[in-house]
Image (cartoon, rainbow, N blue to C red; front, top):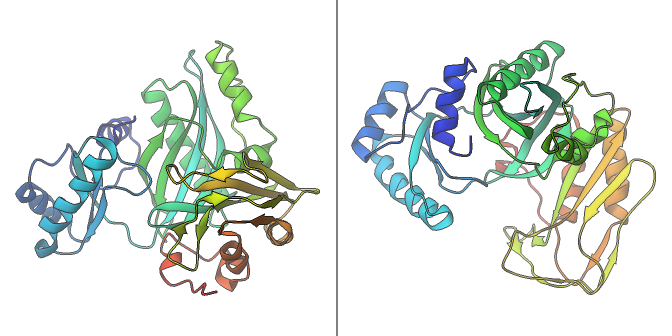
Length: 334
């Protein structure tokens, strides 16, 4: 499941809805253009070993294909040591909704509801929440069943995430599977009172899971705090943290490794903390997050806290009216 082209083929064989595209890796520009014309533009080129939005290019017409192909392959080769590419129909203005699953060595798989990860920039997630404000009981049931079917098809063991794109009509398509604990796992833990790390350890020890599916009973939101300047094209801001004070209180969880005096190196991903807020309703969770972020003090480096505070004031975000294209029109000048 770590190879995206193979994963897609496996899911399609298992009966999980997949986006139309190449059945195997594309061998040439000519082959890619032929497939693109067959399924119709726009299409998206994806690195089979990719992640974090690298090695991905949207193509709108034949004339753009070769340049996008060369660029995507070069980026993928440099980032992952693998320049293999596949192609899919580009789903415009979708939601990015993922289903958390857990499987054991005895063939049982359960789902732990969904997370909405649609607020992202250049395919990098910025905010995650559970449940999705776009979700219905019917859709959750169908997506949960599809995720379980896919995980069972590969005899999956441990915690993993089946990621889907969901269009405006609530049609959903398999995108990829993350075969690990993800950054956004705390929002799932908070809404179903479930420790995914402990469950992962139990599965590894051969302890069977209950097989019970979970539905959210609370609402949780996670904001990723990065050492970046959001008002300067999210430019990384490594350096020494001169003052660090994290918020607390009811419904506030902080996951971090930094402290006053910590030096953020320039070599790695810029995320330095996660703020997770949970409440009975989405509106209450948003208000708690606003309070927590306003009390969060990180000095010495630039962070994305001001960006998140502006996002929380946006009426469309507050209303749950957003897709993966939200950041293309969101204005967040300092």
